[in-house]
Length: 449
Image (cartoon, rainbow, N blue to C red; front, side, top):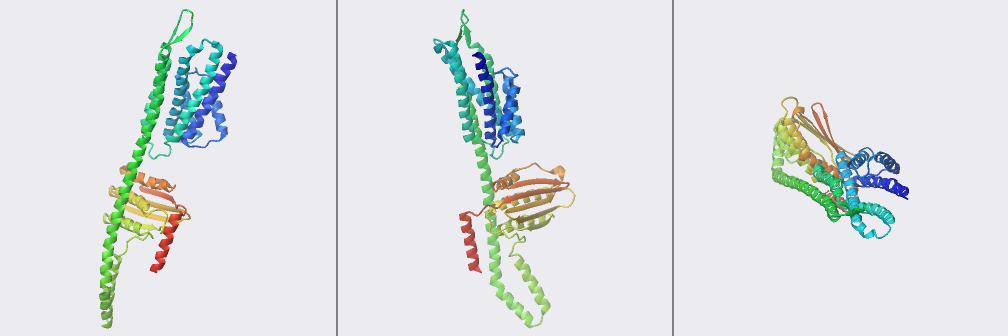
């Protein structure tokens, strides 16, 4: 019978634990893995761990390393998240088994009036099964409520990883050192148990602490995301106010020009009547300069972007930076004007700052973009001085947020003294509200025509 129980305890339950841990690791990382990899990981894990003393800290450490290797090489996850979830996976299963073992140890003295052999078998089988069910329950809670893999900014993962590792080593210390001191034997060699309730409470508090840490970390990430959203809203408000002021100024100029147009026409007619063609040409040239101020210097087919890029490139030109814009955007478009402004304003601010920091060489900024099917390709190229290249700041983070919003991609490339920021946006499919908005725009446009 002992051989069967050893087989069940080592081979069956050991394989289930390894498979269960790797399965939920893939769930935490939100990766799909072929069934063959589950089989290979379980087989390799069993072969490796079978040669290590059961329940030792080395066994758990090896298990963590195996999960990390599987997460990186099989799931292709980033190493920060893989380490975090591997430690979390092992810690949950460790605490689950510890709590159930302590509970069964508390109950065992009242069960020894029965056949100890069968009581031991029942306790071992039921303990393993209940421990696995408890671990699965905890894993499912993590998957549903505490999965952080898609959350922006994972640089704070060390905050949650450090206490998880601390709980891991503390539980191991309690199990390997304190646990032995809780057992006493009488003169007949029978083992009695003392203060295992305290050990159960400690392990329960360890599990509760684990979820409290994850809850706090989730709130931290939510607050960070909220602060980033507030920053974007502040930028949007700034762009809108800037656009309104620009439109007001151009409206006043247009209103003034329209008020004086009759006088201008009368002057031109009088000059033509007198045959003073040279003065007519000079006068028309002055009028052309006036009309140029009524339109935006950069034409992208989007009036909001025209204003923004025109202002930014105007600032760059006043600083002695050579500027060029070859950007065509769809209008109307299901990509919001504000999102275009977030991308281009931050990119151009960074480009202007990089050019200002140059001590030598040609200073220039090139803005290009085109529509290709359902994609919008934007590119901002500027010169820079490599030794003065600053670290990534909030600007690029805001650009990345917009790019992720449209399921696109952002790429940064440097070639010598050239810095290139490329952005790919996927134009959303027409929604009902958007279609109505575009239809109303087309109807209004046809009425104006």
